Length: 635
Image (cartoon, rainbow, N blue to C red; front, side, top):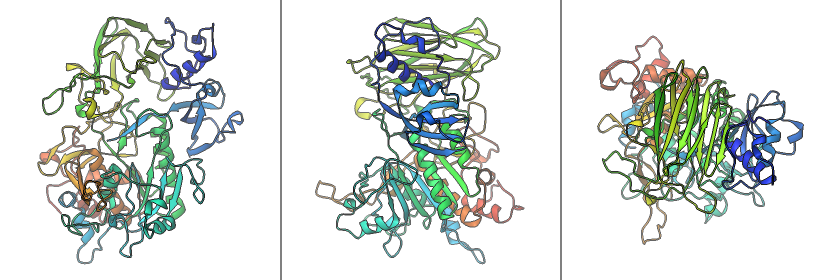
């Protein structure tokens, strides 16, 4: 059976599941035909469950899989948890269009707020009311929300959170999962208020954020009210962009044990959940997600991106994504090869990557799998051979063929079901019992059997980035093979989402780490840039004992596009307070039309997008569309 409906990750899992069920037969019978042998590389347990995204031909899940919990996301896209030994059967079902594995996703104010002019919008002027995000829902999908902080409470001490869904938890007595979802625990405002009045809040609401957690910081930038204070940080000086917005927080989970924060399937559930709550509450809604990954076609055609786009079709909905911090991680390569030509890419594992400060990470042990995808036009036909550091060769593999041998998996298809483009997927998995990859340079040799167009883009998937391990788990393109443009992550390449770049509001320069555009299909993204360097915002566990004789600070400093995006999400909430029926494209174009040109240069820039976000100018243009947009005047 040809597993064309499964994405390459699931093809490998299915192959391994099939392998464990055969003794004398070759599992290649269940894979696209290929020239290679198939040998065990640490087969996945036959009944291992993974959450996947499925696009169907009908509105109802197949009856043969009715016993599993299907969650409707948007259109005909569903999320569902299935055992690996059912994937081949799912692939063969006539009602199934595409099945996509959950990809691993990772996390990516006193002076920054005036830089965006959001403080001007808060204040208003004579005859013009100020806007603070009141009546607008701001959804945060991230990890760690300290709901006890004053930043997220009303003046009477009650919570500003309408809901908190922790997908990691198993429900206890008196707790429950959200409607339409079969996992995690949902807490409403009443339960959160009960917790706030308890001696131990975390015994009532079992979501305890680690000190300085990412999600608390992000939420503070987007919607903190500045009330949290201590001897160092004065009350009212660190406001978020939408200090009176209503909040929903979702902590995603993953069940695949891959040493990652979460995966895309759980994130899609979170987006659908928040949008459903916005409908129920009849509120305009903007979601901020400062998380992402680096794989996929980077053209907005993954099931995750399609689902987000469809959820953004109703009016009063917006989605803001961090552009990513991939510009310094050497994860993109590109080139052109015509018929008969070849190109070699150097794919390095085990450390030795150059860093922005001029240093190089030390050689270490790569403890995790490494993934690489190559996308090119389906009018072309490429063969790929992977050469290990010790000279062992795997391939050549041509379109329609698959290889699984030692720790190497290669899958090549000419017409991906997602976008019709050609894709080569490669995964290096540590051999069973060894726990590490072969370190060194893996040579990826591409040969153009047919190269009418010839262009290709290659991306290395994001991996664990552990400073204690010298970042050796993150593989990279060596030397001149790295191409610094088209380094945006997913979901920043989503069509209706707003991608936000990071710049320093002190030096007015784009951050070295901020991912660059455009998308693979040459759309102009990121849309805008916002302050994201050395941003001081809400610190989880602020004021609580740190175990060292002191207390955790109320404010912490973080940098990255993760910090830039929530500035824009909060500004979108201000626009929704003014006009709740704006569409997602209208919001994006308002921000682009009123951004401050970097260095006075008009047009799109791969680092800046269309420029520095300007909340006051955007609101002014919304109120009076006859006003000029991008000018040098400061409003």
